[in-house]
Length: 47
Image: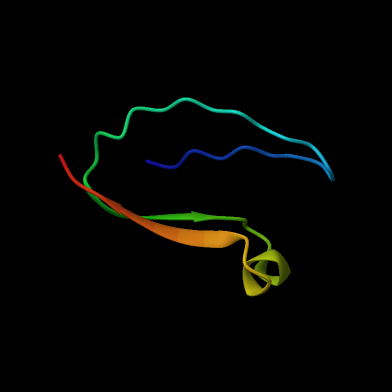
């Protein structure tokens, strides 16, 4: 499953979600330059 939110410069988003797929999940921006500068995190969650 993919969930994508497009934001423009200096926009913010607040989102609620149900964490029902245990394991590693990559939270990231789809622009490589942004990922290079840290807009990326690996989450690991369980039940």
